[in-house]
Length: 197
Image 1 (spheres, rainbow, N blue to C red):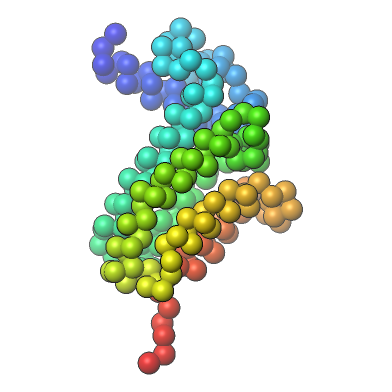
Image 2 (cartoon, rainbow, N blue to C red):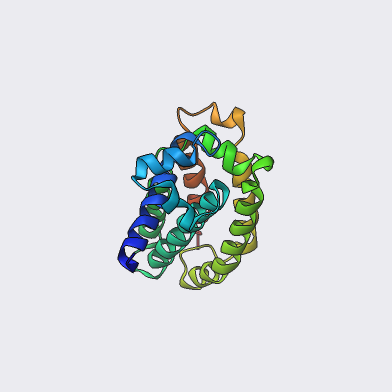
């Protein structure tokens, strides 16, 4: 098998699993369904992943890594504070397309699966990695200078709890609507304030 076909098969599995997990959650989707939908044999699947849990972790890792890459491109790109915030929100909207309540429950609150702890640790590592990016954005003036970047990390941890809160979710038509609302609140809460001189 060539490197190109290995990469193609891996991307098929990861992309298909991501779409199915986002729409239906983790528990409901079987390895057989992932293989059938992606057009990959079970034998090929097991060359890459020993089980569905490791696949879910790889899907989440890829999402986080791609999200961080895009986030850093936006931070380092040209544009005003408001333009950068809009781009970050558009990225968040795209990433939350087709997210289901089942996905949020399985990945963010179901301790039996082991994904919640994994996501919490990956989130902690990611925030540690981008803390300097936020400090740089403060130096450039597009995030308030008086904001503690550590607060952003703490708030991100609480966001995981909020997206699985049934009462909050019931206020919105879809989980994506709630995630967008939360993201808007978060993003515009960190934008620079016009202070009277």
